[in-house]
Image 1: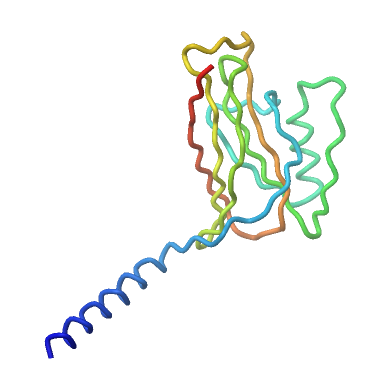
Image 2 (image 1 turned 135 degrees about the horizontal axis):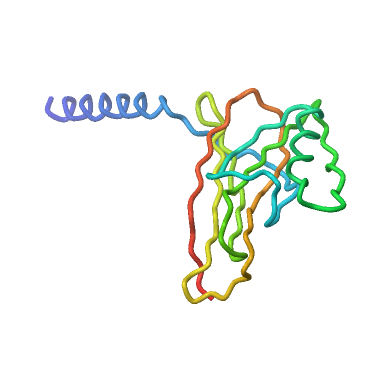
Amino acid sequence: MRALFIFAALFSGGILLLAACQGDAVQGPLAFETVASGHFSGIELEAPQVFMLKSQVQWQEFWGRHTSITAPAPPAPTVDFEQEMVIAVVDKLQPNGGYTLAITKVLPKDDRLLVLATRREPGPSCITSDVITQPFHIVRLPKSDLQLELEVSAEQYSC
C-alpha cells in the first residue's frame, strides 16, 4: 500500500512538472545562412537591435541604410522572399576595432523567435584599431510570422 502511495505521488509530481514546462516551450534551433557580417553599418544605434525583413522593399530600404557609409555601396544580396526572410542584428557603436557580433541560434519559443547573438569584446591586454565600429550579422532563413526577441551575451577574449 505504501509503495502504491509513493508511486502515485511521484507520478502526479511528474505530470505537474511536465505541465509547468509546457508554458515556455523551446523547440530546436532553425537553420540559417549568413548573408553578410562585418564591422561597419550605417544604422547608428545606442543598443543592439534586431530587424526582420520580409519583403524586397523592406530589404532594399534596410540595405540602403546599412551600406550608406560604403562607397560604392554593394548591391543587396539576393533573397527569395516567397520562401525566406532576413534577420539582421546590428550592434551599438563600439569604441574600437576589437568587437564582433554573431547570431548563434534562432529558436522558436512559444509565440516568438528567440534570436541569440554573442558579442566578442577585446580584453584589457588587447591592442585594437583606434576606430569606431558597429558589428553586424545578417542571415536568411525560412519565412515565419512569429515576432522576434533578441538576447545578446557578451564574451571577453584575451590577446
